[in-house]
Amino acid sequence: MRSTNPLEIITQALERRPGVSDWQVQRTIKRSVQLFQIGSKTEARRLVSTDQVQITVYNDHPPHNQAGLMAAGGAGRVPEEGHRGSQAPSGDFNRCFGSNDSVGMAGTTTPLARGASSRILLVEEIMDQARLERDLEEAVFIAGLTDNPPYSLPEPPINGFPIVETTDSLLAGSDDARLKVLETLRERLLAAIASEPNIHLSSAEWFATISEIRLCNSRGILAGRSETEISCDLVLLASNDEQIAEYHTAPQRRRLADLDIEGIVHRSARYARDSLRANLTSTHRGPVVISGEALVDLFAPLIFHSSAQAAYQSMSRFALGCPICGEQEVQGDRLTLISNALLPYGQASMPFSEEGLPGERLVVIKDHQLQAWWAGQRYADYLNIRPTGSFANIEIPPGTHPMQDLLDGTGPIYQLVAFSWLNPDELTGDFVAEIKLGYRLGHGHITPIKGGSLSGNLFGALAAARFSQEMQFTGGYLGPAATRFEWSSISGD
Image 1 (cartoon, rainbow, N blue to C red):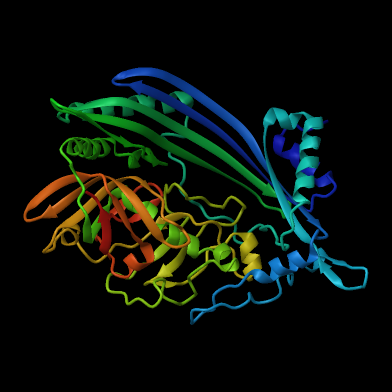
Image 2 (image 1 turned 90 degrees about the vertical axis):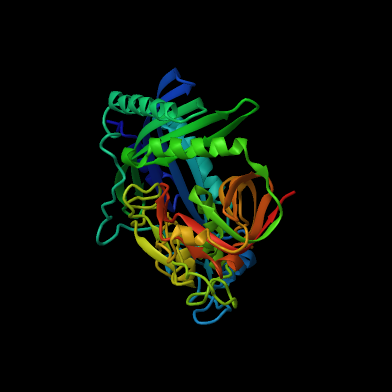
């Protein structure tokens, strides 16, 4: 009798499919209750369910371009510990994959290339055997077109997977229970807005989701986890006799207790009212304090340059044991950056990564020096280092300065709390951000400002950065609530 379990059907089909050298399958079942508001009126309630399976097929084959494969295999250069420079990864790139070798016509050993291809299928598509076979045949064909140096897949960890808190019992029950949670949040939102002068709700969207994830691969991994998420998308309006200003926020949390609606409304209402009386930003060169969630996106270049992939591709500016700011003298707080997959109810917390590596808390940068590369299985194999999984939640220890100290100074200081956009260049560390809202502090006055742009270079700015003692948790970030950069530039009127 043919199995009715989608995972069993797929794994059996993969095992018998010619050309499948390795495989990974992940099934994700989501149930989401959604509530939509226009003003105080509930516009719609929805229940959305999805059940889909992602298949990744790996095909080992003789390389189409042997010279290209050998060049790729030798291209990976990891910066050497102890000085700024680089060295080839220890061992030949194919050293650990003797089973993937083939013998050429002249009797020489030729490494096989590895390619991969992914498909996302719905359950009804999996149950259609003819279609499933066609999809797998196409996946094998496409995987066979790519020549990557060989690499392995994770195997079951000796000590098993860690226990990580990713599920809130208040969100993990029935759909009716999740709907009651959203209705309660709606009432709390309206009550919080009613207490804010000159503030109205434009719209609100609420989502309460439970996800069940099962992962297996051809190396014997079979793992499962559940995770919850509560999120909202709010637009508040502030008005006076002359104009209207809006403020948009979209917080996401795994646990209901971490979604402080009253605090979010109070802060957003203040920002919306301040936007009504904000002046256009003037040009400034000097201290800038970035606070709140506006701070989080700045760390993207650090995450990029500490990856094994960047090291292998000779794109990382970091070297193990060396300062992340190069030759610049560190005049501020020394940064410690941690990838934490074990943080309770973190947005990126999980007992195993998307490829089945155990979650862990990895100190990547300590006291301004690179301590470890974070690496998935592929690039860990290429560099012959321990795989750690993808970068998870950002964790940074508290700084040494009270927030008020960061805002003090003899000249004007700008505190920026919201950007219209902030997309730092991961490779160079350069950033330009349009200022949505900030404050100019000086001579005993606090003046809201908006417009203009902040620019700088993260690596240079970190050499003299100071971090607040006060901490914040934003779902995927646990760290200082504010950072002061001494030499930032603001372009304005």
